[in-house]
Amino acid sequence: MREYDVDKTVKKVICNMCGKELKVENGVVVEGRYTCEYQWGYFSEKDGQIHRFDLCEECYDKITAGFIIPPDITENPELI
Image (spheres, rainbow, N blue to C red):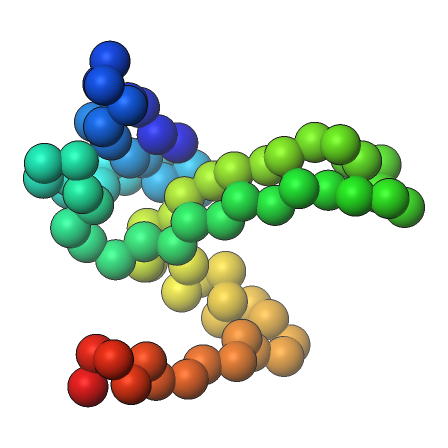
C-alpha cells in the first residue's frame, strides 16, 4: 500500500502482507521490496480490474518459499 504527498511523491509504503512500513527517503523506497501491478483480462472473473500491492523482502521470501516451481532468478549485469 502506498501513500503519496500532494505533489505525488511517495510518502509511505506499507507491506500489504505483514503491515511493515518500509523506509522511504526523498520519495524513494530504500529497502528491498516487491511491487506487483497486474491488469486482469479476458477469461478472468476480475476482467478490467487492476490490482497493485507491495511486499517487504521477508514476505516475498515467505511466499516464494511455498512455490513448487521457484521463480526464475537471473543476475542484473548492470549492477555487477
